[in-house]
Image (cartoon, rainbow, N blue to C red; front, side, top):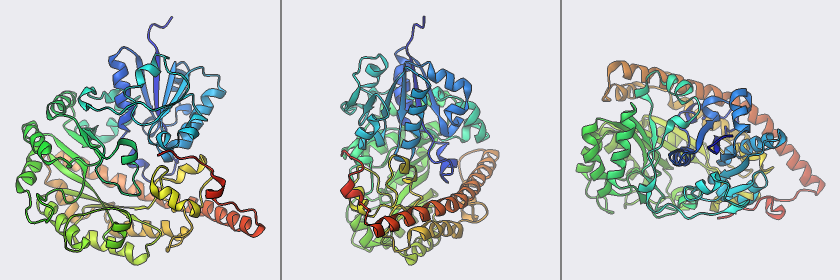
Length: 508
């Protein structure tokens, strides 16, 4: 008789040809790792299966047999992985698996009634205060909404090795362990309210942060396991200036390196943008910051206002963004610029983004298609225009690389080609150019490590672009079929808009 209850977590893989898969497999979701670590520390038999890392769970007989014998299977789903998550639940049910199936994550939070059709228990929001009761079999079937974690210092340092084949299928492909950016989280929430973003609907607009002492304790654990490089998943790592300075002073002696997400204007001390916080910039360099993932989104004033993407300052938006980019570039930081193109944009807007990125020395570029995720104001606004609304199957396409609506100025079929060609124009030498190479060579690491990172990133960029080309061809055929069906339904008078049909209930 087994003495410990067996709990298995799954992060499903999204659409198989998704072009971002080559990057996503490097960065597993933090939620399953955090929850699994809590249970491990309390004596449960725990493992995480991440299909982005080790492949489809039902293609691995050993892993699948292990899954079938679990007491509880916990699925963490985002919108583009929801359909696959539901498929896994159905496979387990058909195979006679007696495990309780619990579903959580941002998509389950926004669409709990939908998720409940495929599982026994649905967790809306943060699961730390509910997970042990689920694991112990003490939670009734249905939808549950536990309170958020107020004190993030309560959370243990994550044990990433709970992920099945973490060493063999992820770290081994990084050539060296020291090159892997180990996921870490120090805060939850974002003070801003962009209309397209699910973050505030999931974690709220009040930022909750770990203490500097707690972050340092976790870093000691991670570096002790041989990881000197990190990716802070925080949605806005630079939101608290004084906290950040205290942390950076403590991390400087550790000689760690980290990448993180941030607003572009974090370096200004005042709303009038008269004083650059040079001390903060200096501490960033000494404390290990090397790459910033910046959500520029747009250089167009009207678009930023419509999306409620606020920036401080009296100059034009493009001028402010250019100034802030120059400050980061001159101080030696790698800048990954993330932009979004929506239905109101034309070819000139896309060209403008690429020209801006080249002119202002942004190192790497990502242009996404504006996606109306459920739970955001954008979803309700775009619902009448959706071409893809056969849920849950069509959630596969809600990943930022597909045009899902019929009112784009670029045209739904042309949209993907425009974005692909924009990236192709920006990137050279497999995703690298001269300044990008110089930026890598300036990093604080051994030359051989720099060379390995150069080769690895170039290969990933090449694979991503190749996968994207294939995906565009595949999607074009699907899209034409949907548009033809939509036109036929309208002609026959049988077309019902998604608004009238109320295909899905979204909870906010």
